[in-house]
Figure 1 (spheres, chains in turn cyan, red):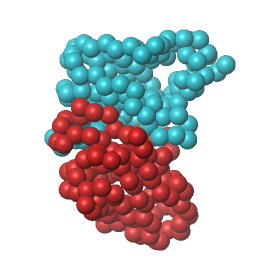
Figure 2 (cartoon, one colour):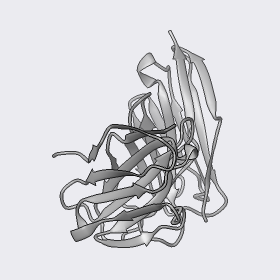
Figure 3 (cartoon, helix red, strand yellow):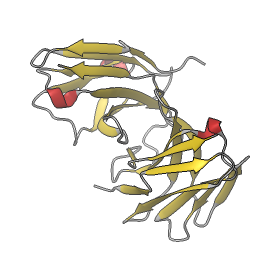
Figure 4 (tube, one colour):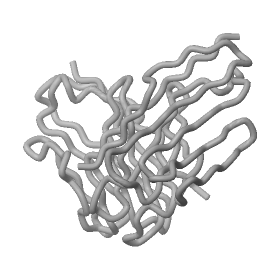
Length: 112
Length: 117
């Protein structure tokens, strides 16, 4: 089945530093979603990208979808302690309509 | 709008016992998912329902796991008998859309943390 691979697995940053996580697929994705899971919490939807080369911004967060629609990235500028958590990308999982397959996630730790 | 409700929040059982989890999705959401999330990993899809029909259960260990969604609303996930490696958080999520290819976000419940001892 279709898989999305995410790197890095962990990222430790000082508050104020930037952070980027990458998501890669071996096959073309019709869309990709990003979720954030706070420690002890549940995944919460951040954004969906659909178009080739699409870039979307949410305050300090910038999301990109690759031209070939096989990769995506999430970049956080000037991290804050509130950014702590695990960031997941999720893509369609194959032929099943509406299937949502998650990557392994990137655990972000922000040191004050 | 009420969110996805799950119960119980926590469950501790001994291996070989059985356990059931309950999920009430957001009203009107046709798609319901059960995920298993082992500590430090991403959610792994166990089963996907579209209304009361199963769309995908390819990763559901059917010798011990079962799930149903009677009347296309609430759903239950059962494990019988449980093994130590079943210790995880079981997340239920729901989504609008009737057969669309991922055009809407998924809303997750708080999850049930299962510990098998």
